Image (tube, rainbow, N blue to C red; front, side, top):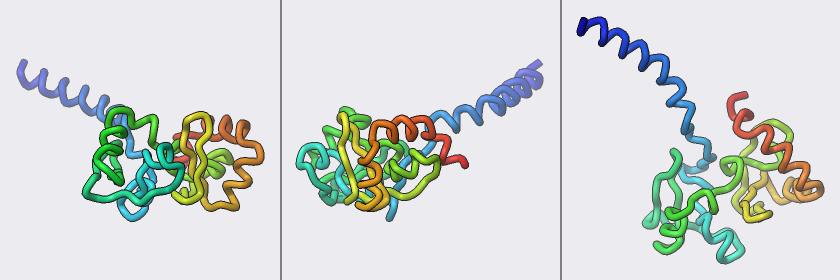
Length: 149
């Protein structure tokens, strides 16, 4: 009996493991090893600009290292990370709206309805802005499946 239970437990674990791995994948673009290229995600909202973070005020979240310009910003992020983390994992929102993945540039950003969006560069950000509502709907439909394609 004990061997049978062990075999059943192992079989069950094997069936559940793939689902567990998919449940919380590392979805954040982390150029240079840090999300947002090391920029402080909270500062986009509080200072209205891209501010380099300090690795001294870093934390790990969702498989990426996040840097902050101050301990207070790190604490604000810890309290509500989804309020500050960029949409689409920090990948280019315009590319995501078209169903593919491209890196996001932390200096080509926009906040819309309380959400932070990055684009490949400032020229692409202008394309994104031209029909933003429709592009957000399209990007939402492609996220996160575009990462697997």
